[in-house]
Image (cartoon, rainbow, N blue to C red):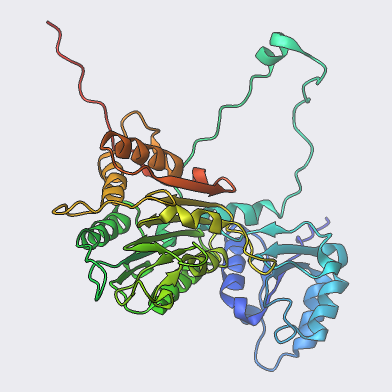
Length: 409
């Protein structure tokens, strides 16, 4: 009686900086019933690495974690590359960041786990190990036309949109309320407090990933926070929110938007933070979906900055930018109110819901709701700019519920 041959094992090929990815992939594949080989788990002290590597590649499939480190000569030896390339059609490439593979490997169809949440990444990982296969039922005849064909093969229902996993995202809240030379903006302090509470509760962003830059003196404090938050989203959900409130002024020569810090002086443009620097930090972050909110005077001057500034700076993809006022308009901070006008409109919708809005608020519905609030209250109208479906960035469920119907007479 013949014995059923065991399926070939999967050897995980990775660069040392990506060890945590390799262990996660190996664990998920093993849990799904696959035979897995990982050097850190299966090779013992004293084993010849070159012999073990050759044996693994020769007898199994090679699941290669493509990344910047994987193609860096400092982390990949010539022996390793020779063995992996010898696997030929038994290579299963999986991309874990946005790095393009070398030209030799680009024809390979590679799965990408970059920017996915845990459950989505697990499903995609398991899916890649199975060929699509033949259909189990006869495909419909494609020549039918008219209502009869549509009735026979109705369109599938639209997919249900679910909130993104903000619990693996990050945010930066920058607020400047007390100035050394410019007029104070006490409402900005209320903005920060209420936004932080909302984002760490309703959105579920962990407190250590909600970076509050309260009344910074140095523009570098703002830039450092944005860069830290961007790195925190890498390999997870890719959700990033950046918020600024304070004085904004146009550059006296170029007209570009300048964001103030506590020590900014109108006569000295170099004491401000150019929004272009914020744009660059957001554009080059690992995040895949970015919501940027600017609540300051002349804030719409930041909209054009979403375009690429040059060949070395990629455009901000998957982004929705909200600006509280036009390029020549001031934004309002009504005296005596706990929050500035535009932020108050946004928070009102997020806290209380949007009448008649969708069950799940996204960036576009939040903006449109705030625009209507501003119009009703005779406040300056907000502006927006969108790239790559940024308007579809999911936020939180709509808390608005219609009241009970009037009682019958």
